[in-house]
Image (cartoon, rainbow, N blue to C red; front, side, top):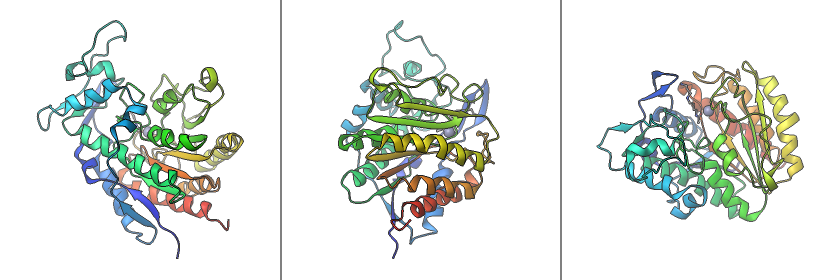
Length: 347
Ligand code: Q9C
Ligand code: ZN
């Protein structure tokens, strides 16, 4: 019998429900819906021989503090006092170091944030801590050597969250939480395949030579997050050379994507020879995604997963973006099936 992939998810992750976002001066319906997680779960439950679903253990507060500024954590806690159903959208972003901000005052949240699409509500803390807990539990499984792969159904996502800023629908950096846990046991590579550059993850490990960050994404000259993700951002100090950004033009199809993945990203990872891998798995590279501009098909995700599985590294797969909700379940399961194929010992 083939081994099941452990999946982590907690129902309270659905309590964060952003309804709209402000983007480019417009009020748009929010892409990061609870239906995304519903559809992923439904797809995985459709294949009960392949997946074993678990509730994560509550992540120790220390895990969050390892990655994030304690004031950012306090701000999320302060948001718990918002009236039920009310959301706060930061719209005032003061220049840092020129003001004094109070992390207990929700009206100061713009100090801790970099965009206007990422609301705070009374339930954000609960959902985001459970999302982080999924990442932490998945990493713990790998850390203990109980298994060689796990999937964290993280939602809200994480890769845009920096040490001290939230944004891009992200509050806690789930991939960074995995990497910092695994890093205690050796070098860690993070590959970010979300359509958007993982600026938060990049920032957290920018000076760290023990954590390689590789990201393939839409060119920030054209796409969010605009300020980060350029090829020239290659690390700082001892971390120089351990941050690899691979921006690619819009319209990229599966064939071209797989070529870039194996010729550039995977080559760099093999050279780094890490002890473990974290995948920031976004599916907004899908051809029908409402906010991404690549052209990957559902079957392409199988091949991407397979190529990553073939690295034969202990791996945590962390859910990031992907907003074509109707196809998200199929795309995730295609990727995970591909990964398991690639990772099989006889291959
Ligand atoms: N309506 C992730 O994929 N908004 N975040 C762009 C489009 C920000 C995406 C405007 C996109 C953030 C995790
Ligand atoms: Zn994205």
